[in-house]
Amino acid sequence: MKKVIYTLVIIAVSTLNADAKIWRVNNNAGVVADFNNIAAAVTAAAAGDTIYIEGSATAYGGSGLAKKLTFIGTGYFLSGANSNTDLQANPNPASVGYFGLDSAASGSVFIGLAGLSLNNANAAGFGADNITISRCILNGINIYWTPQAGTIADNWNINKCYVGNIAGNIGAAQNWNISNNIFTNYLDLSNTGNNNNIVRNNVFRNSVAMYSGYFANNIISYNISFINVVVKNNVGIGAPGGFSTYVGANGNISGYTDAQVFQGISGNSTDGQWRLATGSPAIAAGLTVGAVTTPDAGAFGGPDPYKLSGIANIPTIYSLTVPASIPSGTNSMTITFSSRNNN
Image 1 (cartoon, one colour):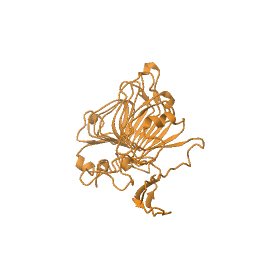
Image 2: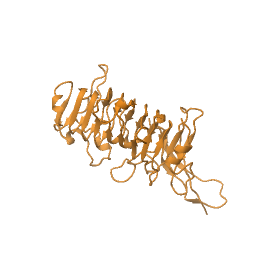
Image 3: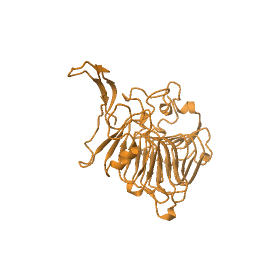
Image 4: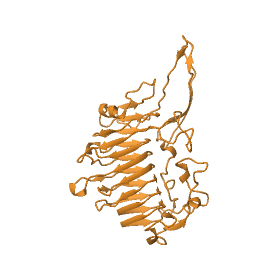
């Protein structure tokens, strides 16, 4: 009998630059890929390349980053208690670690990763602009520079992520779009260098502090601290400290319980529990757009809602059956798989 080890990957390449290269990272025993860790892949890749990180029970680590790259993983919460099942044939997450961003990493994209943290590579090195982080478990972002040093993180898009914390209280974040995320820890953009940041359609389970920006269609359950912030159509769980100033004006409402607002964890997934319950006061509580559409508040509302398990917007294989072995001399075997698009 001849043992078969089979790996099947579907890659969407139509929008990639013709000169860009795709690399595979996989550290599973018996699987042949380009690399088995992130650092080696980053070293080999050229600016503009894409690195696919495949599901594994072992984390791949992180890397310093001084070039524009795209990282695409397989998602998270795919197996075990309170998971979203049948989304990937391989139910292991694509777990990574810390990335230290240099300004040359501007334009980089992170999608479908678990355990992602972004930090400064050194005291002068963290200054990337135009960063996209989507459909990730984002453990944290720390911005360590000061505005006076002339380095500003400009135009970041953090969308549809399961977030620990974002700390820009001693740094400068400008023109950020933070939307349709679930925050388990705090958001702190309180430094006076922060400016023109949009925070919309998120769920916050810890404190929020902002200086100069726009805060709308969120569901909050903890204290807030705002200066020069436009606050509209948010829903409060209980009576979050500082939120009473805004309740009763601009569509802001408060005084509800978790059970009234959310579906809850019973019979639900870790991230699915934050979907709205039947009759939730957050349904159609968002700011009306163009006098036509009134979205729900929270991460699952609006035109680009949170995606369960952070499944990347590329085709995936969610069911795969491969023979464990085939007789020696056999020239063919039967493989059954099911795939879906994930827009």
